[in-house]
Length: 433
Image (cartoon, rainbow, N blue to C red; front, side, top):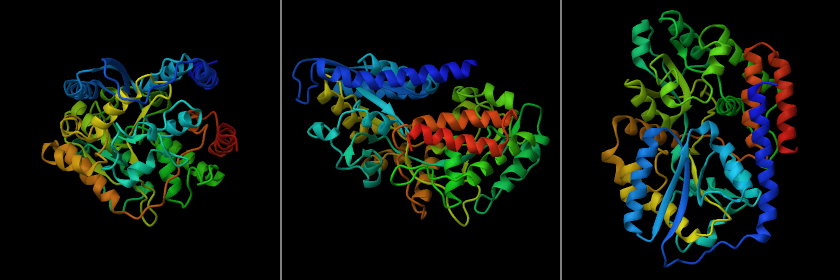
C-alpha cells in the first residue's frame, strides 16, 4: 500500500471519527456562549498559507487585540497539505479552533455534520450588512449562514512573460485561445527552454475539471446535489491531462507527484521554471514574490463561446459549534471583514474583499500584482456565466478522487476511458448518490 493511500485512509478515518464525536460530544459538553463576555478570554484562529500570509494575519490580529483588549487570539496555521487532516482530528477530539478558515466544499461538509455555528446566533457581534449579496450566498448552506467570505477569487492562468521571452515564444492571445492552443504553446515553451523549465507548471486539477466541464454545458454538481458530469466529459479531461504530460508541455508523472502539496516557493512557477500555471487568481502576489518576476493573469483557454469561469469565495471564516467564546469569535470575524485597518493589512491576500467599503479602502495600497488581481476579478464579475452549486456532503472526497485517478492516468496505470468510469463510480459513492 502506498504512502499516499495510507494518508488518504488516515484522513478519511479521522474525518468520520470526527463525524461521530460531534454528535456524541454535543450532549456532554458545556454549551457554547452567545452572550457578550466581560472578562478576558482566549480564542484560537486557524488558517493555512505561506509565511507571508502568516505575517499579514498576525499583524491584523495585533490590531484586533489592541481594539479588543479583553480578547486574546492564539494563531494556528500551517501548509494546506496537512491543514484539513489536523482539523478533522481536532474536531474528533472536541478541540476545534474557535475561528476556522475553510475553503471549497468544506463549510457545507462540516455544517451538515453539526460542527459549525449558525452565524445568526451571533448577529449582534457579526455585522454582515456590508457584504456583497453573492458573497453572502456563497457562505450559506440550506438557507443558513455558516461561512463569511474572505474575498472573491477566480481561476486564471498565471503567466511568466520572462520565460516566454527567454524561449523566444510569443505570448498567446487569451481573448480567443483554445485548450489546443494552450497545449501547443506550452509544449513550444518547454522545447525551447533549459531542461527543468516547462510551458505549464502542472497538469490539470480538480478545479480545472470543473471549468472544463462548464465550458461544455455541464456542471460538477447539480442544484439538487447530484453529480453533474458524464463519462465523455471526464474522459476528455483525462485525455487532455495525459496529452500535456506526454508532449512535454507539463512535467512527467513522477515530477508532477513530487510537486504535489509543495509550498508556493517550491512550485515551478514560484521558482521561475514555468511559463504558465492554472491556479487561483489570488495566488498571483505570492507567486510573483517567490519568483521575483512580473507575472500576469490570463483568462482560461476555451472560454468562447461558453464560459467555464465563475466567481468563488477564496476562503471562508467559520466558527466552531463547540466554541465556548462565540461572541469573541464573531467579533474577530467581523473585524477581519469590516475593519479598514485589517483590510489595509490583508489587502487581497485572501481574495478581493467582499465588502465594497474595504475594496475602496485598499485600492490605493494594492501592489501592482494586487491591482492586477482586483482588475481580473472585476472583469470576471462582468461576464455572463452559469451558476455554481455547493457540493453535497461527501464532495470534499471528490477532489482527492480526481487527483488520485489523474495520477493513475499519468503513470498509464489507467486509460482515460477506464479512469472516467472509475471517477464517476467513486464520486457517486462519495456523495452517496
